[in-house]
Length: 415
Image 1 (cartoon, helix red, strand yellow):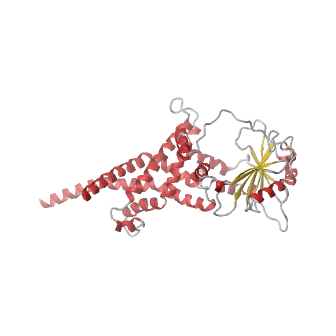
Image 2: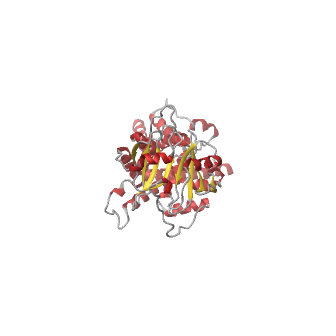
Image 3: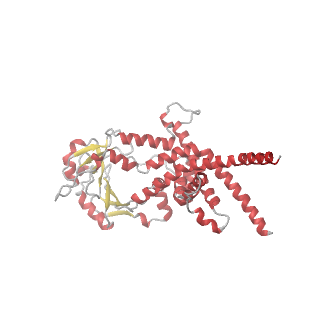
């Protein structure tokens, strides 16, 4: 008796979750289709941008020739750099260019301008502000993914609410519904009997199209569920302040934002005078200290001392197909070379590592090319789910009508 009661309770729970899954998908389906499709392409945002402007990022490696020092490189291209130098990026790969970051006075852009140089000849290759059709396309793609292009409309559509904020609310809400759909879908997927587990793990391509569509929706979603959940649960982080704060509090990393903060200045027009009062050693000497503390192959991002300061900050990121995207950071005294701070990502508490990786977790840039490929496939599956799910719903809606027609035919035949 108790067994039958438990079965009845589970059946009601399953139906309730199925209804939530259905309506969450139907309400958010069209928005999710756009968000997931654009997200699929945006996984390879960096690669697409670099491919379209390969002359900036790739160079030929001459036989028997080593790279120039950063100081020599800067002297060779000093006439092309406008503004104050803020940092230098030195890649690990031999066929990639050096990047020098600079900022003009009054430039309010986040990163200023990046100048690209051939590390073997010192030749100037171009800068990040040059027209790039792929970068422009990816910008529109990001706007579509994040704000449904509403940020391109000047006049507010609803009261005084900014269109960008409106678009963010829509995509954020759709993503929350998507996450609910993933969780409820996992529960619904659980077979009623243990012997049906294997059937739920494969797609029966020899069956009719309705069964194939059903399997594509359930099976592919199951295999990609973990990645889909990570994408879904991190997505609203940029849409709702309350969601962002809640996620940070749950991770134990929330901090009250203080008003203002120290200003950020730029470097002098010469690398040796980058700190104003501090004379720097050759960059290679700082990198020797970095390699002593972080003994692995990788690329360096160097932030030079600013506003008369004497700290030089170096981030180092491992190279390789499975290399984690997170970098380790070391802060040196520019005058003495003393290590003032060493932050190794893997040594940090788990909650802090997650908090630092929200963006990487959302876009798949967690473990290099491997995780990007995984996210690309998962995004493709996510794009298909609103379509296959809607078809399942339509087919279920047709069943009662088909059953009634069949009953009428049988009744007419009996007469």
